[in-house]
Length: 485
Image (cartoon, helix red, strand yellow):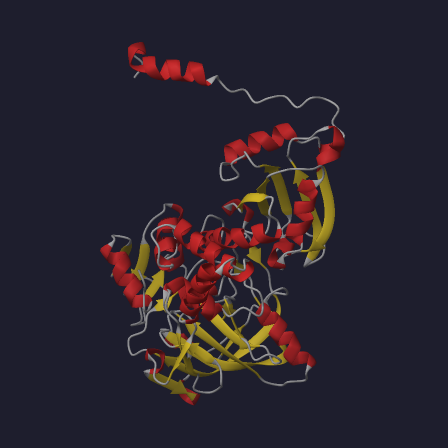
């Protein structure tokens, strides 16, 4: 399945019974957020609010709010299908084929892959209406306020587009944007994000204007790529094209040379002045706590382009699980094959909702030598945004890290705190609430694997309690005879 734009996905969800149209009048001020929060927590459908008080633009929320909808958004019935495709892609890149036939097959696959690259078009739905100068007013959009202590209304599902001033490569990231007034917003570029790197580079070069565009809406795979922690030199639009099996149409912005997704609903065009920052926040964040007021760059909006009948996409974050958990779970699954390339002993990874991505990482490994669990911990802390992980727990390969009950049982039994807990320090997410200093603090690695003499254990490790297969088969065969309902 493949979706050209947001409205095709809405129609698909509606046909599947996974979307509800709300025609009752609702307010952008907290009401939409409360309704959406209840739906997310109950595993409810996507919501299209068609009667937002004061606006004729509908609001879509919770479109990613389940594993099933997340899979559909990325064009598959089950996420495992996409994981297999990514594994195949990594094989093409890292596994040179043997033999002429395999080389020819690989060449054909690479040519096919090339057809998924972004395509530049001259006309686009996102530019059917162009607003400039005095017509620019962000309050014409039904931007929501999510939580009571929020510093204002926030754009929560943007695809923020910036460009590396040295390579010219564009980056597409999802960063919240507090609306200050009709023409300016905050730009929540956290320390470790690619957008922040572009901002710093512009500032170091003395550049006084950094062009930025913000796409709202588009096909669901393209929107999702903004949340994926891709390497700085990897084009999110190429990844979106690979997922969709069709190149993303891009069009030149009206006021800069940036390329924006042509099928977007709304595009904000403008600039950031490196060095100009303003207090942003508070904001009810995905940690479940408010992130408090802090200084961030200011985005100046010069132009708004949109469809004639746009749909405004939004998301709310807060105490997990929320819609962003399902978006992050896809990242976990898709990046597992890449992690295995670097750390081949890794069997599985789970980043549970309660760990809000960067607080808790559960890893199972095929252990072959003493100290291997610690090697994996250090290896993960050296991988991109995994460096922000605060707690890493490592267990043996036969432990199901997706089963919290089994995981807790193994960890509680297997660790000797004096031997198996490693405390270190390093970079932390900007949103971490516990560290004494922002962006830097303590980390914990817990080795909950079975230990042998080489790791200081002088006792034999006891076997698991498991019934013999013979008795299991006997009981299975006589089960009806027992008369147990």
